[in-house]
Image (cartoon, rainbow, N blue to C red; front, top):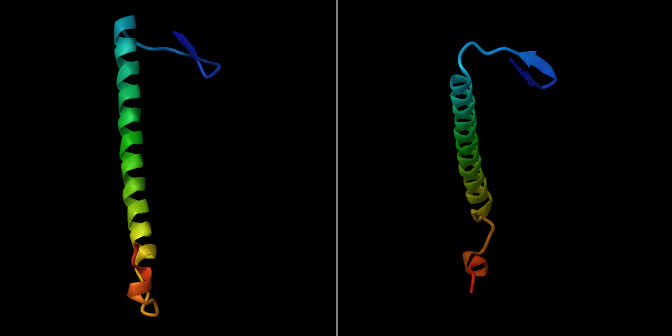
Length: 66
């Protein structure tokens, strides 16, 4: 038994199995967070590239960085 989030929870198995299970859950959460960060970075790159494109009214010579 374990108290988690102010609730009593039970786990069938040994303490080692419980700790292994808990570690696997943490690892999965870390991977999900990394994947979400990658998706957000890709999306951000897409948005930045769209707003960085010159419009038809812009003078390309004035937009060049010196």
